[in-house]
Image (cartoon, rainbow over all chains, first blue to last red; front, side, top):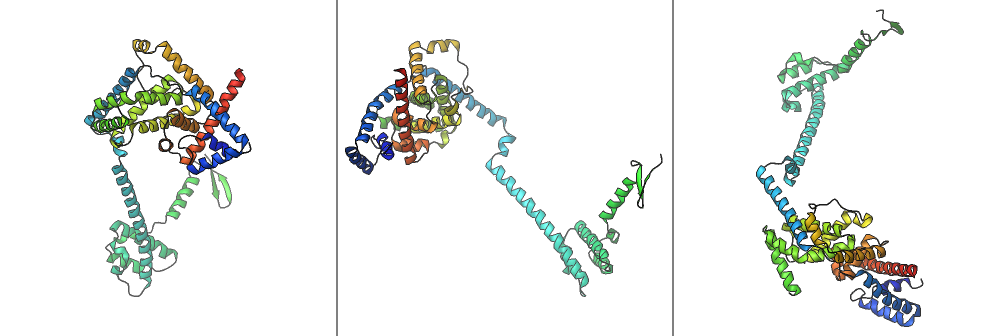
Length: 224
Length: 191
């Protein structure tokens, strides 16, 4: 098809489908181009047939029945809504209310923030305490550990003690410090969880459940 | 009754519906159900499917009545909802029956309602539309139906379909061309 863009316009030759400029340009083209004029005339003739085929008006078979169906459905819906209101609370609806969703989202964010702040506090307290213990003039009040809850304080101290011992540093100052923080000295037993875990696995390995065990490099089978 | 009077009355009826007036809604349904059915039938090509579409459209209007703007044209709203429902339910692609949303018809009512002439008129038209619009994409069929069969303006078609003006014009031009070619092909085969 040679004049594709004109063909598109020819199909749009109805009241307000082409702008004035487009219509003028199409008129000029139709006056000069014989093939497009032929297409235009054919379309006009064929269009009558197309509309004749499709423009018949379908009839609604029973309008009253349709009205009745629609209204009875609506009455059912209204009755269901009223019943829901009277029976009261629906958890599902409540959960999907915008206000509830926003509240839950805010609560989640708040919990996350509290958790993060706590993590940061514990980490920085450990670092501060370590620095304080190595300085000449430390005071318990200088350490930021003082505002932590008591249970957390003792965990911080215990963990710090473990670190110091691991590095071969003296832990005397730490015991003084824990006294200043009113922490029971008996809690200062460092729990080496790694060691404990190793002991447990060894126990399991040499336990009754496993007939094989190692003695040095040698694998020995336990006698029943 | 003139168009403006109908429009004013529609606005008043919509306001009454917003105050939960069932009688006002009955009047709205009675006034517009023929138009709704005609449009739905031209899209769905089935009596039962067209009735389902109309009922679902009116029920949706009732459910969202509080959000309606009484000043807006009710027929435009109806065309919009029916076309969205038609596209959503996938009728455009498969022409399959929907799960019925209405109670099964009473036998007596059913036998009273369907006159043979009316049935044959509708089924003839459905056959013709199906035969011609067989290869027409849903968007083109929708634009063609709204513009050429329902005689709406391009601006109204744009508002109902949500397609741009240029898009509507292109779809319309393509639909007209395809329909004409299809009709020609059918005529040649029958000759």
